[in-house]
Length: 108
Ligand SMILES: [Zn+2]
Image (cartoon, rainbow, N blue to C red; front, side, top):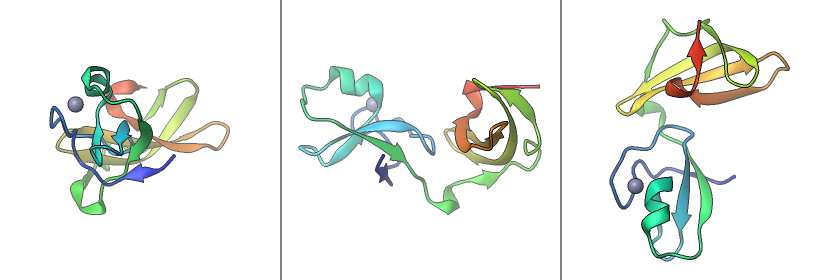
C-alpha cells in the first residue's frame, strides 16, 4: 500500500497515527479518516498508510520488551509516542515485524 506524509484528516483535522490506514481522494488531493470517508460525497478512494517523519515522536524505551497479544503473541521492539498516541513496533512468533497502536493491543 502507498504511504502518505499527510499528518491529519482533511475534514475533521484529527491527527493520524503513524501507520494508520487512511483514505486518499485524488479529487481533493488530500487524505481523510475512515469516519469522514463515510460522510463525504466522493466516489474514488485509495487506501494509504500514514508514515510520519522521524522527528514527530519520542521513543518509549520503557515499553520495549513488553509482551502482549494481537492475533498472535509478539514482543515490542520499538515504541514511538506521538501527540496522538503511542505506536509499537512488534515482532511476532513467526518473525513478522509490524507497527500497532498501543490502544489495539493488550500488554502483560
Ligand atoms: Zn476525519
